[in-house]
Amino acid sequence: MSDVRSLEVPEGLEGERLDAGLARLFGLSRTRAAELVAEGAVQVDGAEAFKSMRLTAGATLVVELPEPPAPLEVVPLAVEGMGIVWSDDDVVVVDKPVGVAAHPSPGWSGPTVIGGLAGAGFRISTSGAAERQGVVHRLDVGTTGLMVVAKSEHAYTVLKDAFRHRTVEKRYAAVVQGHPDPSTGTVDAPIGRHPRDDWRWAVVAGGRESVTHYSTIEAFRAATLLDIELETGRTHQIRVHMSALKHPCVGDLTYGADPTLAARLGLTRQWLHAARLSFDHPATGERVHFESPPPPDLAHALDVLRADGS
Image 1 (spheres, helix red, strand yellow):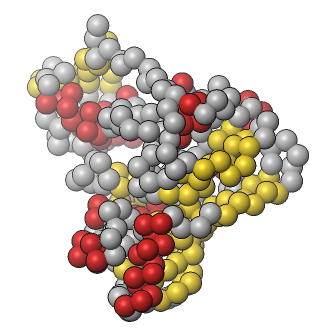
Image 2 (cartoon, helix red, strand yellow):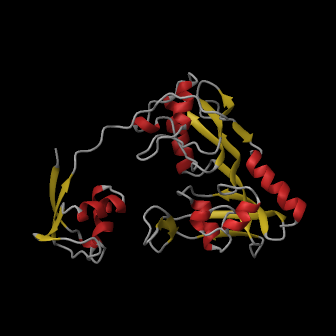
Image 3 (cartoon, helix red, strand yellow):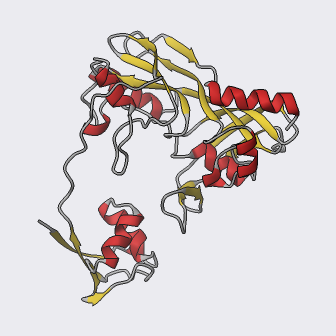
């Protein structure tokens, strides 16, 4: 059953593209907003609309929204290679392998951290959306390393607040193409949806504040191993910021990496690993620290870089 909505375009969306404005007004992705326009489910002042048209303040939008999908289900499933680094009554820290999502999402049918924990018999917080209960931060499917998941409701609240106030330290190891200059620096550049490709992100005017600190650990002939600390936690932040510097993560074909170098190193994903995680324990207040070494595929790539000077 559809839901027909009618509203006036607010002044703040004057001049905005229709698909972008719909996304903001109704909490949709730009891809889904564009699909609704293509399906004829959107009218502007009673006339047929097209996605790139510009909105005028005061114009009447009529949108036929489809029935919302059923909530995603967390499927308990053993996840091969997912290590439990720490577990107590309040939190569980996992070492996420490649090819595993943090939680279920539309279009993803593979393994998830939440499903893996459920399959292993862990109780997690019921706070948050049904498909992401206990999740207070995420890693990309192709990024490995440390994640903390809340087990108690108190821990969920405290950890979400800690991430919001930036008291959680998240440090990553990344191998990027070339040699960043300066070798130690900060990228302070806003991130938002890519203006053409809604499925990826970019540095854009009007995006959300995004700050990344980096320093060189080891330099090779064609690449550099960096230590990276996130001050903010945007989707694909490191990958986008490194690409904006013209030094994409090795193997990150989505953001402009050289496929020949990735193939030579045996990489099928970006060289990016969540190596260190520190936070104040939500029950005791004690600062806790966790570390994770690079997994075999990333370690092998480093060995090749060191051996042949690539």
